[in-house]
Length: 168
Image 1 (tube, rainbow, N blue to C red):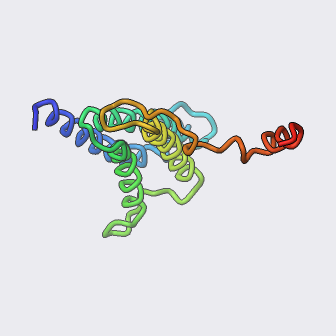
Image 2: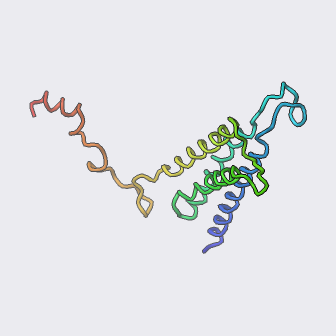
Image 3: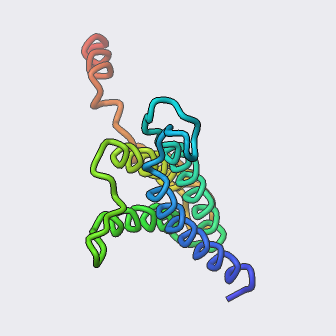
């Protein structure tokens, strides 16, 4: 294994650890309120500012993991490792601890955090999985489209109507 490959594997491991740490911090700061202690006082409203952090960081982690997977010449599925680690960390924290402590809030903010982190991350993963992989060959060239790779023009209703009008 080359030093570049080792560096990419190390970077991928750091991205996974970063995803776990972000999940823990996001859950810890999820109950923040506008009560005048940390944030300004404004009627004791719940403000899940960490959802914005999740919306920004999970796609970035996935995109960087996709670059690592491409540099390693591996499947783009490796790009999903940070997203998977983030989700697993959140779900593990949902289970009560040994003393019955629960970090997971049973309200709307938790659902917003899950959606705000998972959906942009899944979108970035889908983009990584679909980025130029269709029709690609091992040598890097692209396969030429053939009649068997797409819908046949004979099967479309417009083509059938044209043939009927042309007397075929």
